[in-house]
Length: 380
Image 1 (cartoon, helix red, strand yellow):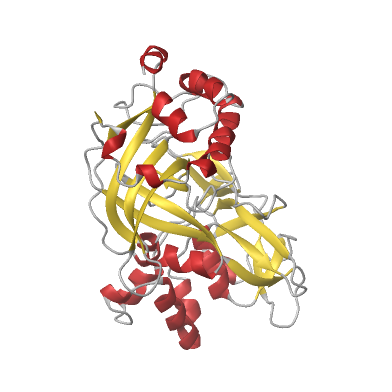
Image 2: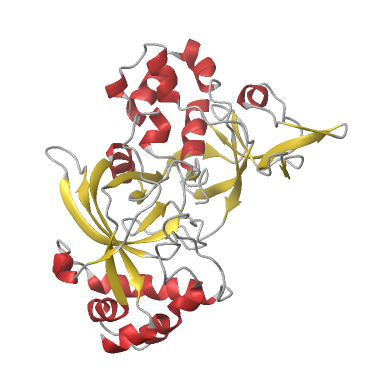
C-alpha cells in the first residue's frame, strides 16, 4: 500500500511499547520437517501467488536490489530467482516445488506480528449534507528535497526558501481550499484520520458503489500516535488502547475531538485507484496484496518477494487466539515495521479483517525461504 506507507499497526496507532526489535539476524538452515503445520498448508492456493511473484520479478532489471540483510547471500536480486521462476513454469505441485527450490532458514530471533487492513468508509464524491470532510489529493506544491544531512524531506518552496509543509491543523483550517484537490468527502474527521493511518481504503458511496483511494504522499510532519496522546492526558489507560477505544473516545468527546486529532501533525494525501476491487490494494512491491498471504517487512533485512513461514496466533474472536501457521510473502513495508522478525500481516477488508488487524500483536516464529543456488537445487 506504500503505506505510511502501508497502514499503520496497532503499535503506531497507540504508541504502545513493543518488543525491542533486533536490527540484524543470523540465518541457520532448518528442515521442512521442523515447520509446524507444513503438511497441512493449502498448497493449491500458493501456485497462483508464486506465479504472480515470478511475473513481478521478471518485470524488474536482474540487478535490482530487492533489499535484505547481508546475511542473505542469495535471493536479494531478481537474477537470483531466475532458475526457480523458470522451474515454476512447469511445476504442478507447490509443496514439491518449494521443497526443491527453496531452503528454509531460521532467523534466530523471536518474531512479533501485528496486522493491517483496508478500511471501508462511507463517502460521497460530492460535498453535501453530512459529507463535509474532504479527502485531499497530493498538492501541487508538495515536493521532496535533500536536507543538509543528506536525508530526503517533504516541504514546499516559499520565496526561494524551503519550508515544512502545512501541518494537520493548518490543513483543517483551510490551507488547501480552492485548489480543487478534493477527491471525495467523508462524514467526519475521525474517519479521515483512520483512513490516513491505514494508508488506503474503500470508499462506500451512497448508491452502494465503491471507490478505492491509495496513498499518494504525506506532508512530512512527524507522526504522533493518538493513543499516546490520550494516555498522556489521562483519558485512556496504557493497557486499554485500541482502534475501538480511541474511536469511542473521540466520538464521545466532540468538543475535544479536533484538538486531539491535531496533536498529530502528520497528514496523508491520496489518489483515486481504479484497480480491481476483487483484489487488495497495491503494496510497495507493486503487487496487489492478498489477505493472509501478504506481509509488510523491514526491507533493510528481508527482501521483497521473499516467502516467509509464519507460526503465531490470530485473534479470531472469543476465547484464546487460534494457532496460525502459514506461508506468506514480503510484499509491503511500513513506517513502524523495523527490525528482524518484525512483520505486519495484511488481513483484507471488512469487519472481520478490521477486528483481526486491530487486535493482532503476537509473538511467534519466522522462517525465511531463500531460493537455492542452481547447483544446490539440482542436488536437491
